Image (cartoon, rainbow, N blue to C red; front, side, top):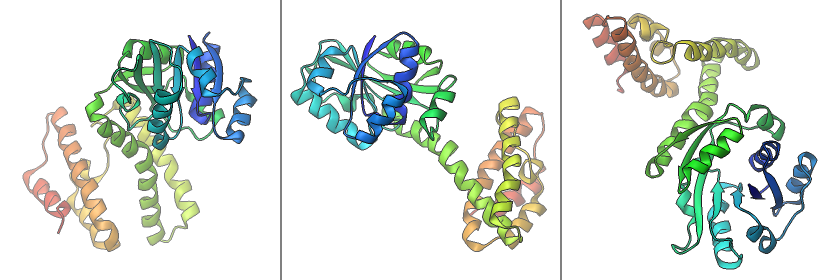
Length: 287
């Protein structure tokens, strides 16, 4: 596969390196940023080409720009670049469908989306963890997408283009909101007299332990704590001492925890005692 990269950020750089290692050929790159191109060349020395040279020479074009630029890049390619018939255009956005690339119905190209379900803080980190990363794929040539993901050492999952925003929302909850949950926990520790730096340091092993439990036993079995046990008095104590601004968030998360708790007990052939269940629900309902 001869491929080109448009946008030499972290994802584009890591993809190019690993695909070259898998035997494919990066024929060149195009980017507006001199700094990102220089960083790219630190990992893979490829020529910076104008679009009119890069586009017709590639079997596959990876558009690895920021989400807000993907449509405009596709418009530029559709209007100005000589396109090779049968070419594949791929973007790596988790929130945009593949057909955002199809500016004109009669374009002789295939459109595909390959989204790495991972948080890459740097090129080095991306190269370290790209193998084993899960990818959401959708578009015209999903079999090609599966092959690319396999060459990257990843795991492919087919997703519905019409529901891609929900897929991306799930990723945001699992990644970004994990940071938010840590922040909320640090706030609560601060109320108990523990400094923020010490609070995070003490919470991280707990969070790692929970992630380990999720890996080992999955959902809903990994749920522990007072709601899983049905200990309404502990929950009542939390709410009685909690800063008012955090109560609604705690309650919303608690209701979801109660749903998981019921599922966990059902797997064990058990149920919450009716009085405990009613009390938990009343405590967790918004006032």
